[in-house]
Length: 115
Picture 1 (cartoon, rainbow, N blue to C red):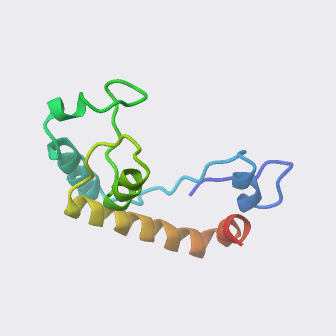
Picture 2 (cartoon, rainbow, N blue to C red):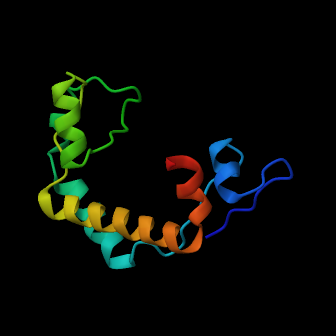
């Protein structure tokens, strides 16, 4: 992790909350997890199916997790189909791993942002 509070912030959490810092969690995902996610994202849909969905940046498409896709569907937000279930599981694992790391190593982040 690399995050250094600026002179005006008293904790890493304060620094992130004020937009002065970004937290980097190095090696959160293994090379194998990265490879699996990339492969599944590439294989999730034939490219021509993306062209009919209006997105902000042509040529760039975020593929949502299953819960994000369900939220987008409920609000009628344009969205490509979600990641396949195995990729969704990897994303959930990475999120839980990140939360554990933050809670263990940078508790001021949770205290500041979510209390």
